Length: 118
Length: 115
Image (cartoon, rainbow over all chains, first blue to last red; front, top):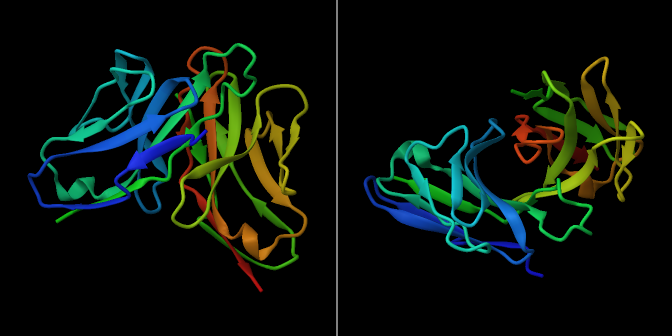
């Protein structure tokens, strides 16, 4: 298993540009998450999804959109990039649908996308 | 709602010395507790977790944490650190049962191991 993969690893955007951060997991997890990590601030939840077709806002959703058309993919969309969105973005997944999985409460993280908005 | 306080933003320690990274939480419901580690330029990895049962939990690389309900703490300890333990450590909490997927993270503690 590759686990959780994210693309791109780095990106520089100009103010007002848009982009999509990609996230894919191959662990058959129901739940997926997007976090942003700012220096000295820990991780803040942007959006999460409990299954295909179901998404909900986290703590800091403004300026972002998500969709979940498949179990594997959970892209994060920035429509009008702003300098305040400069951050490192992490995707995570959890809750295998396999009832034999004892690790359902553990979130597995991707390697992150470092985004700079100038 | 839950909150997590990591009292130290940075902890320098000499190699082979013991270390304790402090974590306190606040919650109106029962909780699950986690420690995640983030090595430079990498994502977070689960280090250890407390769900139920024994209040002392251990990781495979020598870390341990003890859940103290009365003090609402989940401090992380290691008796002898190595250079390779240099990383940022995050304490996290979620409600147990329904909603247990909703993790709340502390701000992190950067552990620097000095040769």
